Structures are given as structure tokens and as C-alpha cells.
Image (cartoon, rainbow, N blue to C red):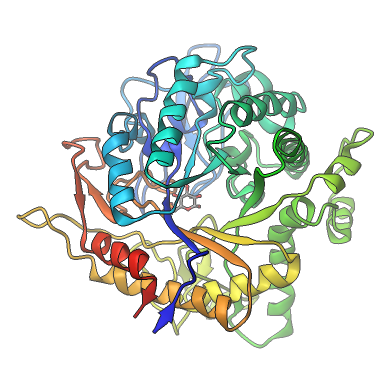
Length: 492
Ligand code: BG6
């Protein structure tokens, strides 16, 4: 029997672009997600664009297919394609019901994101859209009434599209000031309602999927290095302005970290993993550690990258590091230099080899009952900062029964394993882990594939991959299991 302390907060997580819908209502501008078509496990999502000549087309997003957008293309949606973010789970019109469901489960924390383009439709607008501000105000007030602490991501894979079409995304330093203005507007407006922020979702995925993280239309290291630097500056400025306004507001770094295991004992496998992990940790080493690590400067030198720095940049990063780390972890990965020995599996924004000791879900993601304990230990002993597991969960193909019930016993079993690992890290290893927000607590659109049928939730949303359905909400068996866990705080 594992008992969680009262101080450990349980809840769930969503993101605006995957959950909110109402993509063009009440003054919201388009986002980079609003031009991504739907796909599935075998059919990658695509981005739609138009050239000045009028020619239009679809290109890879960089997630499951290479990023390939012609120079001079402007990204835009077209009537004849289906874009799942446009309606998503329609939280915009179901928020009361959804927050009631979360409160019913006993959520203590709700991780959600603000759509930057709902407040600043073009990203660079001098004045915010009051209707957008009012929408989130309602949400945060409703959270407060229900005793739920909101944890807000400022940019979760859905930056304003105009910042890509007009400025070329985060490689342009102008975005730092636009983001600072956005962050200041949000933090001031919701002072007293929101105490936890995270700046960029899974910032370290910039390394392999530069479009969704940084609005880059090219996959070259020089642009990615510059974009990362600008996001670091924007994050540090957010920490600065939040602390100046109210020192009790905490601003976290958010990245993805799942442990990677070697397939063989060949030391070359360990070196390969060391190299991979340096690419992952670079982001948190800067944002949490406050300085560019030596291995990154050397890497840039080898690759001929010349980073454009301005006076005061490095001092800013050193002075305003993140208060906590929020991370996503769905399982683990396997790597080897001996590719011929392994078999490809899927993975979250990465690819792995099959682990012969562990099962996978329908998308090939490895389900690992030990990953969270290992990840929590690695991160805590590297950074000594409070940790939050802000994404973890199980995507599954499932449907309602004739009586509208759904017995997701597999999800309950998965979550029991995951939370047992968290409890071990907390009690056996003394890791300072503050809370757990299960990803996609109410069904939402998959980021990787754009599917609705890849379901994560405690609550089923009646809509299919083509946006057809009633959007009604139905609690699954895991809803009642999680409610019981939160009220008793006992994992058995
Ligand atoms: C994380 C993202 O990478 O994984 C989420 O932050 C995403 O936005 C989640 O939804 C699960 O991935 P997927 O592809 O199953 O939606």
C-alpha cells in the first residue's frame, strides 16, 4: 500500500490547440497548429501552404515526415482539408462541464495552456484581444471556485501563425519582445488567480521538430540554435517579470525526458546515449542551470554554428533561471549503434527500438513501469529543483459500450504502475516531486497524428477523427478510480 502525502497534487493536463477548438471565434488568430491536417499512425500529418503565384500544396511537419516547405510559401488553411485543431474537443463551449468533471474527480491542479493567438491574434499586436483575456479569466476564476490550482503553459505547440509567415518564427529575435509583452499581459491580468507558469512546452523537441516548437520552416542547426537562444531569453524575461510582479509566482521550464537504455553493453551504445542526452539536457542545463554547457559550445564549433549573442544575454540567463522543472515522460527509449539487432518502435517525438522486456501500445510507444522513477532521480540529482510530472498517460484505441460506459482497465493498470514509480522516487529516493497531471485527462486531439481515436482521457469525448459526433462527455472507469485515489491518497 502506497500513501501519497497531502502536499502531492494530483490532476490532469491539456493544451489549447488540442482541446479548445473555436479556432476563429471571438477574435482569435490562426496558429501553427491550425494549418496541420489530420493523419494517423501510417499517414503523417501535413502543413498546408500557398506560394505568391497562387500554387498551393501540403508538406511534411517534421514529426513523422521531413519538414519540406518551399521558400516564399505562406502557411494557411484551405476549406477542403480537415484540421483537427479547429474544433478539437470544443472546450471553448464545454468548459463548465469539463471543469465540473475535473472537480468531481477531486483535481487539485489543472495544467492547461493559453492560446497566444487568442490574446494577440498576430503575435505582434500592440493591444490584446479583450475577449480572449476574458475567456481565460472565466476559466481561472472557475478553477479557483472549484479549488483547482491552474498551471499554465504559455506556448504549447501553437504559436501565432503570423509570426511564422511574417518573421520566420523564433530564429527572429523580434519574437523575444513579442513574447515578453504577451507574458507580461497574462501574468499581470491573472495575478492572484495563476501561481504556476511554464514557458515553452517540450522546448527540447526543437532539436528534432523545429516547426511545432519554434515555427521554423527549415531544419538546419544554425536556425535551431538561434531559435533556442531566443526562447531561452524569452523564458528568462518571463521569470524576471513574474518575480518582479509577485515573487510567489513560479515559472517553470518544461521539457520532455524519458530514460534511454542501451540495447547492448557495447560502450559505443553508451556514447550514443550520452550524445543523445546532451541534446536533450542542453535546454534544461541552460534554463535551469543558467549557462550554456561546454559540450554545446563545442558542438556548435564543430558544426560551424555561429550564435548571435547580444551584450547582457548570458547574464540574463544566469540571473533568471527557472523555479521548477515540469516534464513529460510516457515511457522509455532503447538505442544502439548496432541498428541491425533492433526493431523499430514508435515514441513521443522520437524513435526508439523495441525493448524485449516491455510491452508497447498501439502506436509502438514503450510502456515502462520504471521509467518515471529513473527519470525523477536523474533530473532531481542533476538540477536539485522541484519537479512536476506534467505529462504521462496512455493513448488507446477504445469506444463506448452500448450503455455509454467504457471499462478502461488497461489504463488503470498502466497508471497504477506509473504512480507506484513516482511514489518510490518520493519515498525511497527522497526526490522533491510536487505533483502529477495526467495527459489528456479529457479526450483530445493527438499532437503526433492528429487523431481523436488515440484517446488518453478519464473522460470520453464523443467525436471521431473527422470531427463528427455530439461532443458529449462520458466518464470512463478510470474516472472513478482516479477520484478514489485522490480522495483516499492510497495506491493499492
Ligand atoms: C507530448 C505533447 O509530446 O505528447 C502533447 O506535449 C502530446 O502535446 C503528447 O499530445 C502525446 O502525444 P500524442 O502524439 O499521442 O498526442
